[in-house]
Image (cartoon, protein in one colour):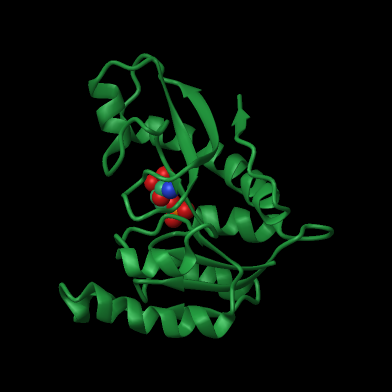
Length: 195
Ligand code: GRF
């Protein structure tokens, strides 16, 4: 299976996905693309010999469709079977999602369906939750709402702030996403629960 990965920043999740696709793994990375030409992850992908593309979303303003049309040129040229959103911070239109429905994954730093959207760790802390975590789900038109494919939980500890909690969750993201991708690429849709 050919996997394209979309990033917006440092791409730590992209790196763990790329580094997991070796040996008898059923998938290989064919593209890393970003909405930010300065995304640190682009250099990490290039170091790994993976084709990269960057389409700055800012010149397109509110015209999401025009931005996506440009991004799609790069994605479709790579002919991916699976699209992985990994720290990708743009909301995609239903039209874009429809092209990849059933073969597009995202990792979200909360135990969905709780805390869809942004600032998930601050919200969990604010709510006084005893645990937090991350979810890998299939992307559908509704934000952070598609079928869940995997989750990992972490304890919320006394003295945690959004940064300490984010670090603890991110470590689990790096374990969860590669395992879910490997199962997904081999046709296994069973939910994976880590820890
Ligand atoms: C992190 O906040 C992570 O929880 C979320 O996207 C952000 C950046 O991740 N998935 P990455 O290092 O760019 O993969």
